[in-house]
Length: 545
Image (tube, rainbow, N blue to C red; front, side):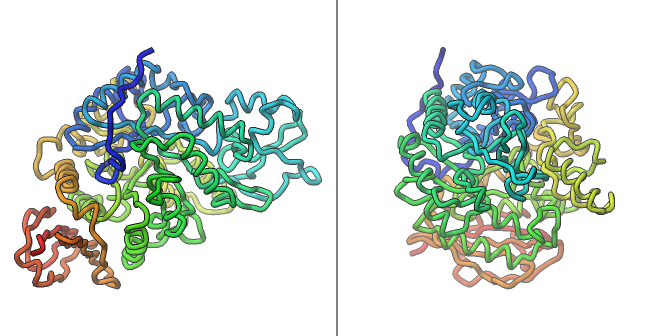
């Protein structure tokens, strides 16, 4: 069997890199099955090389029953036939490396599929060697061990009659949580990771990694007492090769914890995916209950993370992923000012310190969808609808939340062209393509200088050209302004001003005199005016004497 191409990468290469997340089933279908696949990704590598990215974060392609779109793994060392073969994966790794693009694999180490051989063995008996790979408890008076709830709704405990025991699952019952207290289980997971390193994978995105040290008897699901002990062991066993990048998804991270996750000594992870900025519109702790974004809150959130990790750890920078609604529909204007606001949001993010992540279609300004409930595919969305209806909420109120928050907003097929199915497939797509594919698509943008795609390409190039993006400190300007997000980055030799108008109205902003002789690196209007026009954004660069 051919092994993946290993490309020598310098230590901490990811600090200057830009990554691109691919949701495989929705990216490109090469067979006409209606589902995206690995060969489809290979066919689009030249597109990604043109964009200028350095790495691909590949959402799960391991063997899976696909109850939760691949985040329920049944074999950590096999490719799901839905996406192709191991030979296809090896080709992807090899072809990407030839274009100087690293493959970052998405691994789910908190839980497995209930079809995984480990779990099938575990439920055969209490004395089975694999039984302790999972978390089991006795019930109480015919009820679950406690009242913990699953993220997807319902109890976090499922009963196995033949054992007389409940098993713990933070997500679907088809996703039983792994017992990280078991050293044999941990060793098997490490062996799986090393299998992929040998194949040529250059890094890993670790799904809900802050949940591996859960203690359900104490109602602890994140940041358990043994979390950092486990992460240090994981890193020592698998990641000490200096060029391996690790990105930990941690919904419960704060700045202090992130300093530990991404400490400069590399003892845990390269960086952390934290979601504090993504939760600012939530009320009552629920993603489905929301309030309007208050810009000063967002600015202070970024200020805390930019200043808190500077010199101590490392930020990931993202506005979209497979679990989040499209950012141009969320914080921008996906109507009249779609192109301008998409560019403005990118400007805001790409001026900061950290490693940017683009989610497929973000570089085109793809938008949310608005459909009837029967057209949604996401398990979380469908479960929410049923629970909300049972709680007495009206169909209209529920659908308002679904339209703005459903994970399916991000999972519609990639819009490649104005051809049928958006050029995604020659068959019938597994999920209907967003109807605006006729005018929002890659083919119409790659050669246009004023497109969202070309703007992202320029931002990526700027980050590679100038040290200020990776080295400079952060200072927030106009902290309480509800329309303008402005900040400075400063290093020993350079200074950068980033200004963004988050509104559809003109605003007044006058840069300080030191920027009068500065160079405008990028502007979404193409020039500067005396006032800030709707959703205007720009960067001004100064070389210090």
